[in-house]
Amino acid sequence: MKTSALAKTDALFGFLLTLFWFVKSDIKTTLIPITILSLTSAPLCTTGRIFPVVWWIFLHLLQFDTSNQILDVEEDIKNKPFRPLPAGRISPRDATILRWSLVPICWISSVLHGGTVLFSSMLLVLFTIIYNELQGSRHWISKNLVTAMGFTTFEVGGTLIAGCNASHMDTVGRLSVAISTAVFATTIHAQDFKDETGDRLIGRMTLPVVSPQVGRASILPLLVMWSIALSFVWRLTWAGTIIFVCFALFVGLRFLLLRSMKADQTSFLLYNMWLSVVHLLPGYWRYIGGSNIDMISPSVVYVDK
Image (cartoon, rainbow, N blue to C red; front, top):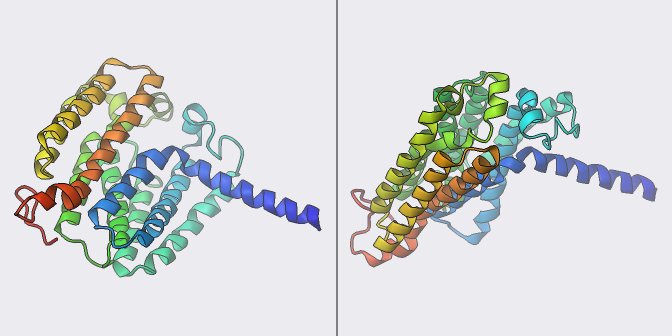
């Protein structure tokens, strides 16, 4: 009896560990930045909303990652052999069952928060299918656009759950999600340099594969321009603006000058740190910057706080 219970415990732990390895690579790229944006854009209703936000984002991220990794096992063997399928932790058949079982689970978890959150979940499933099963990730233009729209649905769902009214976002929330979508669409190719070898192997036409020089050269001006623009929109102090822009300059120069796989992995980690700051700025305006200003709006936008 004890042996049977121990075996079941080990099986459960192994299953949970497999789920973790599905999403591990995207914790820093998706779970953390989008959670930050959701909690700062809402604004956060109560601290009790933090876990539901994290859970909703994690569940939908798991749904996306299982779909993605079923189709790209060959790439993962080269780039990420620790993932469940190349590591032999789960069979392709069981991974496929898990992938499609997660769709109704995501919808059930969403409908608990209302119809608007459910709609976000349904759109996210749609973009997942476009990106993976319909091969929207094969060319850098469609990849960037579908990725940006997928992140938008993540952010809308998370922001709605974090707020006191799960069917409404105020103007700050809508503005922060719109800005985040534009930032993702124009800079998300920063994630593709570290995966260039695997992408070439499966014929994926990312920007680093199609035009590596243009891809690397574009990151520096884009990060700097976004940093300047967002410092103005969210009324960052001059000291904060200088630090933010200098960090963007540092990250952009790394991508341009340091080109090994290991360097690209570090540069991408720094890019995600920069992105997390982008997602913190609405919270800065709500709780720090905006409180010291008579007008109740970020620059050029009137807000119903």
